[in-house]
Image (cartoon, rainbow, N blue to C red):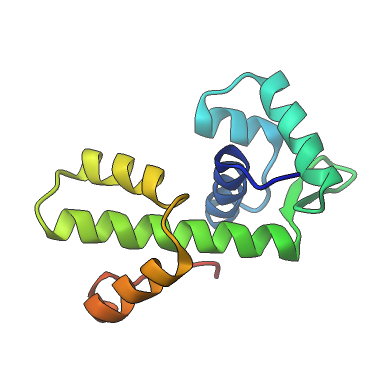
Length: 128
């Protein structure tokens, strides 16, 4: 499966939800995005088949190492870019929306250069 923006968003949502609660279920992802159960089920099947998530006998969803790497990268980009945009005066709602779009398309080199240029003021901890 080619890693598309929507797949990255699903993985990031699982990371975020897993930091807030003991386990993640498909219904939690439905609530997070406001998607129908069928939509989430189809995507979870694809992510499982491609080695990004696993599901236990209780239908609790976990990130595999490959899924966690993608999720942490997207979450770090999202938080950094949101904080950066807000620091230059962009209203929070717009900063979050724009960061969500840009996190998928900015190159690793450009993101690294931004972090190095702006230092720790916009850095965050992810993936605890």
